[in-house]
Length: 135
Image (cartoon, rainbow, N blue to C red):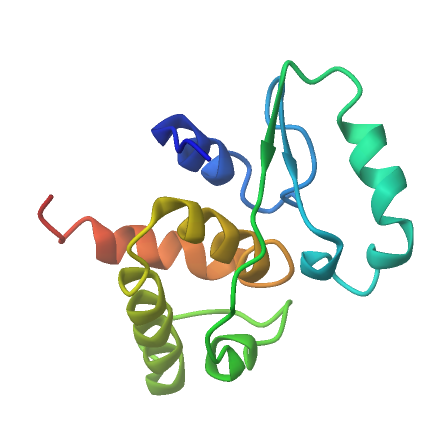
């Protein structure tokens, strides 16, 4: 599976929308086990509905997931601030998880699991942290 940098950028486009929704003329084919409980029963219909007009379909590969208890402990509607020690711990764990991935295809899969269901509000804070990282 070839990885294109634009695929990662497309994941970051409208981060509050589910990953399976179209991003321009591109659709991510998310495995059913990555869908939230709300969408899992209607997974195939969702994939077909949002992929009708897609010029490109990007498969999201199922991977062995790391321990996500710490990041997933933050509620979906809960506010996030790096000034709160518990939230700093969550952000640090997310950074460790993402930095531990060597293949960008795994990063795409991990993003689909983490940010699609509930952690999109942390994304802005991590972008601020990433600004300090030199490439």
